[in-house]
Image (cartoon, rainbow, N blue to C red):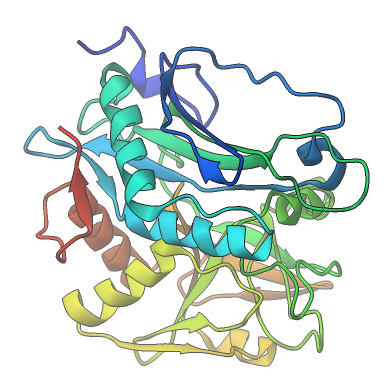
Length: 340
């Protein structure tokens, strides 16, 4: 029985749901774990997560398909990316199979919060892990808590998709050989000031360049870039300090296998950006956010696709991936995981 929620007015915010998955790591091993009803966490003031930011997270969605199933999209990739993050942060990896099962448990237990098909809304899941024992000297925790909570969220774009304006940031998002390629909470903490500065200047987001040379495109604070060339190739920036977006990797396959496009995953010099026909940001929340313009210290780059609507190629990519996710287009094997 669906909850009494006005699905059409949902924003991208937190609504507490009935159940969350909790699993604790103690004495060198993960406990059984299971569903809990308490949404609060009680920790000592000296917990490692507060002192040394030993924390990481993931994000994925569950939704109704056209044929009435509740599904999630490629949760095994979220599980593997979190395991890679944990290795970098000296945290114990949560087993991939156990992660996927936990996702299913949370979605099934909160099925009443999954928005109906066609509303554009979805159930957003937030797996995360924190170091929980008290640590005063600089060292990793030895006890951890892995949790998944969920919240219904509305469509990212209300009232239609309008291209956004970005600025080239003077801040660095990630250092070479740093933590840019993992989903650590600390990466997002450092992006908060630059994004608020961008907002105060009238821009939606920042374009970060590589910290070493400041000549190559990296990503924004929370999304990968995708570009379309004038001869219809999809180009995605390659760097060891870019987070490997699951949406971006999926769009590359959609472009090649479904739309017959040539795909290039390579370094992208910033000097090349004005030559592209279309530009977008990709991620779990919006799938694709079109970019209309980029301000480079007062010099404006405007893409041929314009500032009014998503370009034709990005529109095809968006509609195809959304169609796959919603069960309207046949998905590659393993992409769609049915919960119920």
